[in-house]
Image (cartoon, rainbow, N blue to C red; front, side, top):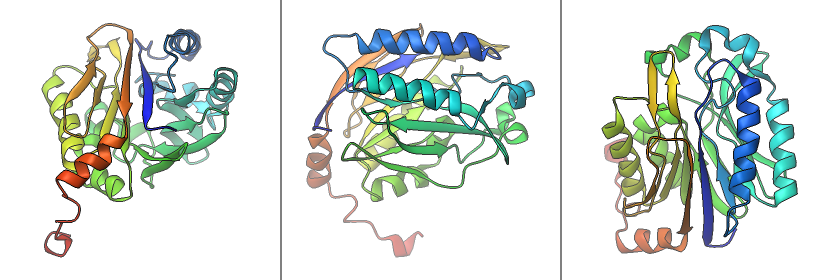
Length: 265
């Protein structure tokens, strides 16, 4: 991937408990995003887009081994020559259901996957989902990158581990609800500033039961500046980033070189 990357974030209104409807919408919106001019290099989906938070039925709704998702997204990437951070899905495995991101390069090859490490007790994730055990570090067409899911951004030690591993861009699929817009914006900007990397966050919109999701998907640069932000409606947010800015910022303020981990690890 070149230093300049064109992004398209799919800010969906997810229908909780209706994977069929969500798959149709997801495919239509990916097609619409890929048809944009200039053509994006990378598309991003939100968290749990296949089922939403229908946790009481998640075992029957989850995608077995993620096979349907992987087949559809892989074929899409091959056809359009774009990479996709396939949000996250409820995925049924032998050990239970996980909240998992699958990542595909422009040839349709799956290059990485990540299952959410920190389960959100306020929405009873811990009662219905299995937590992941490995950080989401990966290589995106030659660029060191990383992924966290929603609640993960409240754990700065995870983001720092990913940055120390070389990540220049952090992707954050999410279903982040009202009334915590201030937390969402502040935490994402903090992760970008303290780790001097791009943060690309894709949230959802609409209602799920009594929970309202506010969107505000964002692209944030390594200085913490918001360079693109969506509103609270269903939309495709586009932006172009220059990854060379990461090295420039890290060179001007050498935070990683000045760490004294023996005092706080």
